[in-house]
Amino acid sequence: MQLASYASHPQASRGRRHAEPAGQHAAEQRSEFQRDRDRIVHSSAFRRLVYKTQVFLNHEGDLFRTRMTHSLEVAQLARSMARALRLNEDLVEAIALAHDLGHTPFGHAGQDALNTCMREHGGFEHNLQSLRVVDTLEERYPSFDGLNLCFETREGILKHCSLANAQRIQAQEPGGVGQRFIDHSQPSLEAQLANLADEMAYNAHDMDDGVRSGLITLEQLGELALFAQYRDAVLRQYPQLAGRRLLFEVIRRMLSAQVYDVIDTTAAALKARQIDSADAARASKSLVQFSEGMRTMTNQVKHWLLRNLYRHPQVMQTTLQAQGVVRDLFEAYSQQPQHMPVSYAQLSDQPRAVADYIAGMTDRFAQREHERIFAAGPPQSTD
Image 1 (cartoon, rainbow, N blue to C red):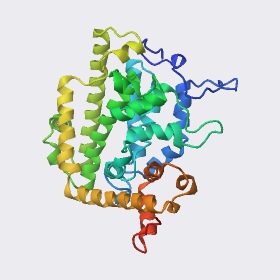
Image 2 (image 1 turned 90 degrees about the horizontal axis):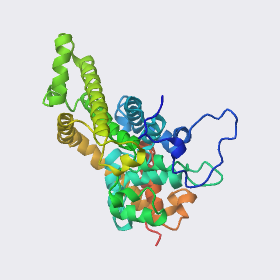
Image 3 (image 1 turned 30 degrees about the vertical axis):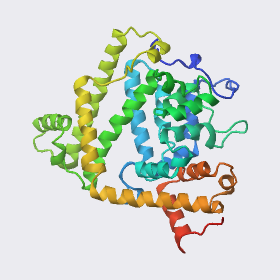
Image 4 (image 1 turned 180 degrees about the vertical axis):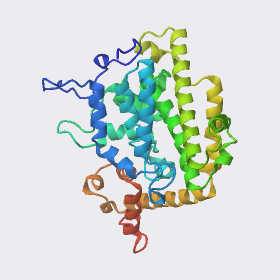
């Protein structure tokens, strides 16, 4: 497929932080963005995503989504839309697969707890942590820390960032991935697309997982205009359909409608603003978007899930328990760093080392660590 003029072309990449020779094998046909995707897939942080939570904790059921399955679903949606828009599929896939590498155990509950623990030490942002994973924490190569990904992949991974952290990045990497949060420019179209695919994926699979868990029902989902529209269409075609088959078909049609809506709306915006290059896309307002009607219905889904699923008493109970585990571990490692591996215990910035160690844990490893450390009661400070 020939890429559009406004796509991210690998030969025009801003490059890697550490210079690397081109592929040495005569048969090397991978682009730089393909190499990025492959490095992400083979990283330790990516493998750990299979045991990291979305909404439901890892031990609550084998069929609930994890960060791994979520990332794969985001990549599938993003690639489908990228192909239709003639954007770079390899870049959008790399961003999608890496966007959650910095997530803590226990989903957003763990992130919120770790941010509270790090309040006096710069805080904790999972997007910034994902960048830290690929820039620093992965240990695979002899010549550099991290995965040494291309600028465009790193830019897409850092989809949100506070101004203070952006300024810190800018001081270390002038004109780098923190720049757009300071001058309010946009990332590549591929990064914008991966970001929207992320939203589409988690809304859809949280509906599915919510019904599977028994915390919400098909009847309740009928309160949502987007769901009701496609449920009614499905039942007109299959009047006897019920249960999970009905749910699956409605969600499938919802996602298809959102995909085509994004493709049509984005194509129209690109044409209307006469975008003819990747740089022109960065200088424009956000271009990858839903139509106004679809955005209204999608926002309703997000707010509804917040009220009815994410704040459900049963979810809140496990959330509080998970946050307690993270806070306990942070305090224990801060007081007795020897509980951590030597590579973390000996680092000079101990609060950040503790945050890095905890953020890298899977749900079940964090639970086991908590049981190991606190089996004989809270640890005593060595000060």
